[in-house]
Length: 300
Image (cartoon, rainbow, N blue to C red; front, side):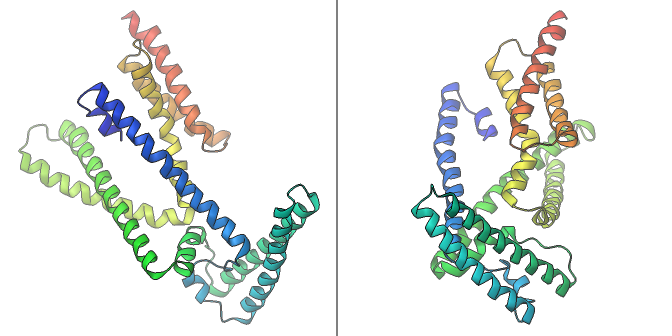
């Protein structure tokens, strides 16, 4: 997106691109979150599996202990379902709310016992099926044709996004680091070979990160949490560039560094919800950038 804005032929074209992006992305984000909410509601009235990942579930589902837990889980689900229906009929009833919460906590307790049993039975201490909730829902309840379309859409979106990101990373690495610091004068064919190698290296790095990212919890939260370390600071640079004429390059550069450092320090010593890091990073960049621009650069 930033590349599109910076390469716009005119200010009007950049504004149009920004508005079109907003018209597309805001409804898209709403739709993504809405689907998650609807899946949550669906599982309030349709029993979810004890373990969402089919491969992990297959390792223990024939065990007598797991089957007993599954029966307990079904009973607890029916109790929660009845409580949810009663609470929906009269949302102002505190007793209905408490009944629902008690039944939900009972289900959570049984699921935790099932996870503990799975770890003991398999000898694997690492368990995380958060990212398999939606795939489990799709493969269980969606028609085969819809499943195929969803898988095709996921692959298409992933390939288009990855190709653009790898191209950007390769270009930045070759032009901003390799060419500037190592081989300032070389043939274009040489830089092309280096860019292919760098693209492969970044692809390998992305694969390693992806394999380990699944262990960190919900992928949506992981992506946004890591992004929040930098999104706010980058926004602050654009605020300086667009919002004021007094900001200088040095101010924006050192403000960016200060913003990133401030976010990491805040997360290290006084962690809060990662969504706040966007605001913190932006404010620090703007304040530090303006101070350096006004107090330091203007005196030269």
